[in-house]
Amino acid sequence: MNRQGYLKLIVGFSLMLSGVVRAGSPNEKLQLKANQSIKVAEEVVVSVRKRLDASKKLLNQISPQSSEYKQLESVTAQAKKSWQESLATLNRAKKFAGRISSVSKKLAKDFTLLTITSAGIATANAKTVEMCLDYVEASAKKNKKGVVIIKKVIADSLQDIADAKTNYEQAKKLIVKGKSK
Amino acid sequence: MKRQIKRSVLVVLLVGAIGFVANAAVDTSAVIEQMSNISALAVQAKSELSQAAKGNDFQAILTAQLHVQGTEAALKDAKTAFASFNGAKTEKEKKAAMKKIKAAYSGALKALRKSAPKLAPKSGKTGSAYVPNVTDSLWKSESARRVANDRFDINYVAGGGTFGDRDATPE
Image 1 (tube, helix red, strand yellow):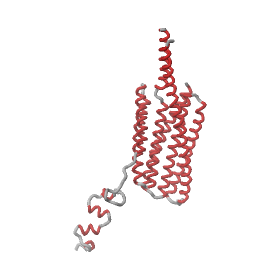
Image 2 (cartoon, rainbow over the protein chains, first blue to last red):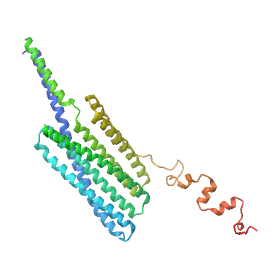
Image 3 (cartoon, rainbow over the protein chains, first blue to last red):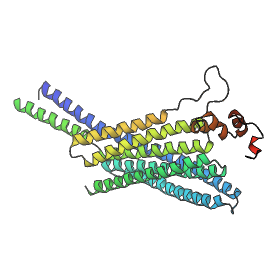
Image 4 (cartoon, one colour):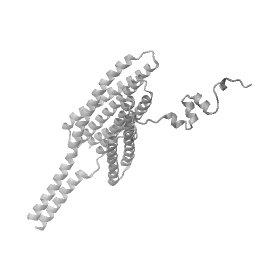
């Protein structure tokens, strides 16, 4: 092989290496993002737990005979259920993150994606719990304007979480597809 | 010699193609990730609004409303782009949809950095910021405002009546 041939071979290998590096780099970025998402979701879930406890205390201050009590009790129950859901989603995300190292590169990327999606849902879900607790607190303070706004944003955000869950299901399907290949 | 050159050219094309293919295809997983991110940002903005509403902070409510509007608009754009991504038949169409979703995500992040203009008193004036009076906008006329403000007596005198007339019998 002459000089030109070697040169072309070097250029070719450089192209291949750049291709491999560029293909690998987003995967690392995704893994980093997954870890960050889990950290954020963890923090949100912890703060929600604290607020949920505070909300229970607040509920105890309201007379069980009052008309507001039953409504606030149901909102708190809804918040608790959502908190449990977000905790379960977070644990699932962590589980996926643990499996990343044990699967192939293509699947690793998809698992990371699922981790991010799960952590995103956990965060969004926990945020909705916070909104429910805001509703309880605003009601206790007789802040009518606040109650009206919060009621609307809870309804809207539930729709956003439903959309996020749809994306999550699609991500899961993508992984099944990747496995069958 | 010629054969060697041909072989090396082939190698160049082959390895180059491998590198290119590894990057070229639009990644469905990346699209779903962006969609999930935008949904989470929209909920985050709404949570901020409910916090502000709970605190009854007028300025914070205005800023949070701006964030909600921005993220909602971004989510709407992203949903439209995602629908066209799912229906796309060519790689070009997929890339165009992906670009729109990325732009929507950047738009949502940008919207979250915005803040509402401060409600400050006009120059030379002191006191608290101007808060719109609902009664003023609903009752345009002076007399209507007086009635609304429960100043019937002043209104009655301004209309030519005198005190005592109200109690007088018609005859």
